Image (tube, rainbow over all chains, first blue to last red; front, side, top):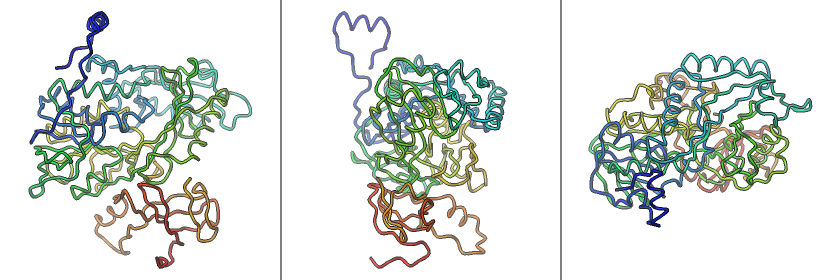
Length: 418
Length: 90
């Protein structure tokens, strides 16, 4: 059994030099479980945790091909926010933000939630009108939002380019003070440890190679470490949803694309907020270590290589300097890529599949990390009850067959343009 | 960097082109009334990890549409030919 983290425990370990116990057991697969979750990312681990904590389902295994934290949970830009406009999304992401706010206490693990505020910039009156509408919708749903004019943005973010020469003059913005950042690795470790305390088996270095079935019903998984029976099976595997679904004979509305992220060398505290550029898809914040963390669009064509193309590096660096000219001499330290599911409407899927007892969580496009707690919450409910949680009914896998595509940004049915 | 051979202009950086999706998908014949066939054509993808055949358009060049063979696991490119023309002999 893992030890509870507290100031007292910290003092005791400091004084006695006693080694800390490992955060979760290294479990071997048993022959069968009530629920097998494929994918030990943030979503899979959160789902396991809420299955145990909210629904009392503890005969659960999380199966991970690599090691915990090796996938997209450690590859995102760590942002959390709930400034979504379409009914359904607004409430879902606000539920997620509320769970983030209490997560360190819930998990007894410091995930370093930092509600430093996010400013989305507008570069003209019409763009500010759109943000005002979004802010009004948020406020009607009880979510904080403040509309900023150019003077407000100048006071809060004086280091942005307010000169006459700039190609996209800053006209105003929308501020959500409760938005911010989280230490993403701690989210994976915290959920893994908390799920483990309930008896959930976390099985690393175990790849799923197929499903076992009886008729239309999925009865378990075949893995590189043997066959595992499961009353219910859940897929939560980010970039490889299509590959897992294909093993169950399903084709998904998903194409896999690479999204790159970047971090600069550490500099002194400078960017105190999360800032989203309004003229391109570009977002920047500063980590506790001092590095500027930023990202942009997907590269634009489907791929499973986790290496990005250089023109995107250039494009994102141009956005950074257009927004904050003073960082033009700061050097990039690292950049990396993560493979994400892109869907025709930019929205994910959480729910049942055409195969009985097989559940799917995927298609997260850009928004998977901030959704981690609410996804775990709602996906666990869906698996335990056999019916979608009310907060994710708009994210059903069959929504396109009913003409109910859920396109928050109104971009049309092209995966590579979302 | 990914380089693509345009049938008119030769080998160019991929930034001159725009990706336009899986070229192996077959549009249902005109007059198909089964909505499922149209749904599958518009919304579902094989999304293979490996050999892929896809459309690109040389938008910053001659604007030719072309079909490119590419491996999505490695980004290694293979043959390319003008869309609407017969696939060249291997």
